[in-house]
Each structure stands twice: as structure tokens, then as C-alpha cells.
Length: 350
Image (cartoon, rainbow, N blue to C red):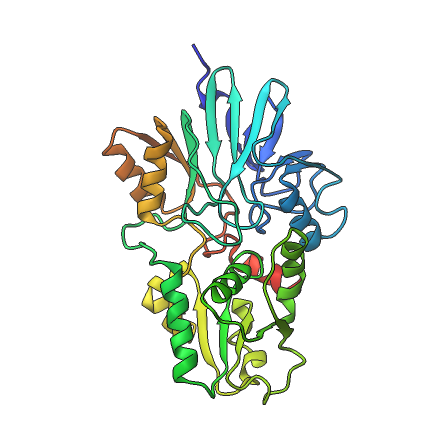
């Protein structure tokens, strides 16, 4: 009989541990060997010995953390390629969350386990599209694991932003967007919608933009907002880390319209508490319907939930005969971009 995953996939203080391969997946602290799904701060920590990830994730980790801190040794594994580690077959598949984000397929003694990391099933212009992978056990996030979270099409939210720019042509629109994933996606969506004017960026956003460019992505005319004078930014569109839109940096802008792009903008109180005038419900995570549809598409008989709203998702799965388990891993961020306050701090300091 094939071994049940509970006998070889263990939750330890460092994180999820694959015992036969002797490695951790997205560990919360430094470990000798780490398998990383993507480069957000709550999944990609500094100080590991050996790191296995996609080439894009390794490049982003190196840019964010610095040489040496992103793993003493790095081994890239492209989507669709497989690697055997002590009899465990490891294959990475696109997760659609940020550049290089991967689902991890582990195959050992006839058992298939998929670890999604964070994922987004709807296509994004800056990511390889997500595809459900057939498995016996699915390990999923549930950041937006409540029925209230049903994300609208991102293109409609971009249209709202462009309408506001047209209605208030003398005001600077400053949009809060995390430096890894959300900022690049917003720029690509704006360009696809026909917005060809210069887009001004807070200085913290440029370093990871350059990594995306190194992998062949283009974003049009981007300019630093920090050196532009107030008059030049009148009527302009500015992107900045979420923490910057409420500080003195934003107050120097001309009569700013404060916007924030996040799945949490579905909750009006969150927008109000942050002084957001134009909430944009744009998420890089699966919403309630997508979480459930993914579980069904994989045909998994069991689902483990790493973080988020575990109880609601587990209850919904049980109603369809799928066994659920909450892992409640330490160190997972709540915020839409998968890094919480720590990720925001890291990205602003990048």
C-alpha cells in the first residue's frame, strides 16, 4: 500500500518537511536544504544552505536578499523539468502568482502531492498561466477562503482607475502596489488597456522591475517619481508600495487620489481605515470559487490548507467528500501579496 503523506510530509517548527528528500518547502527559518515556491518574503527567507527553485525565483530572491543570503548554493529547475532527490521526483509547474512562482509536484512510492504555494488561476500578463495538476493530496493556501471573496475581473478595476484619471485630470493618482508581482501586473494591465503615458514609480519598485525586464518583459515608459517635481506629477499616475501612499512622500504629490490594489479592498472597512479613496479589487490569489474549483480539478481526495481561512474551505470540501486538514504554518502573511507587513518592509527597503 502506498504510504500516506502524513507519514513523510511533516510539519516542523521550520515549516513543511519532506522526510525522504530531506528538504523543507518554503521554510520559515534558515535550513540546510529548501525548496521555494516563489520569492515573496513569507515564502523565501534568507540564510538557507541549498535552494531549489525556478530560475526566475532565484533571480528575484538574489535581488531582494543579496548574494549569499538567497542560499549558499542555488539550483534552478525550470517548469516541467523533473529532479530525483533520494527517490522523490520533484517537478515544478506554473502557479500564476508572480514571476517564477511554482506549484511543486512531489511523487514518492506511487503518491502524488501538489504544493501550490500561493497561486492565481486566472491568467495574468506577467506570469505563466496556472494549470491544475492531478494529485492524491493538494496542499493549498486559503488567503481568500470565504464566500464573500469573489474577485471581479482585473480589467474592470483598471477601467475604473482610468475613468478616475479622466474625471480628475489635475489630481495625481497614487496607487499602492507591492513591489513583487502587483506593481508589474498593474503596469502590464494599464498598457494593455491603452494607457501609454509615462508611469511614475516610487524608487523601491524599480529593482524588481529590472528583474522582470531581464526575463523579457516590457513595461513602456517608466520614470522615477522621487525626482520629479510636484508640477510634473500633476494629473500623473504614480505607483508606490502600500506603506508609502500614506506617509509624507505621498503628501508632496498634487492633491493625490489614494488608491490601493488588493483583494482586501473588497472589505470596505479596510479601505476606509487606510484612507483609500479608490479601492481596486485586484488580487494575485485564488478567490473562494477558484479555491474550490482547483480542489475539484485536481481530483485530490485530501486537501491540506497552509494558511488563511482554513475552516470555511475545509467545511466546503467536506460537503463534497474531500477530507481537509488545517496546517496553520507559522510565518505565513495575511496580506494579499503574500508577505504581510514584513514583505512590505522588505520591498520598501529594496
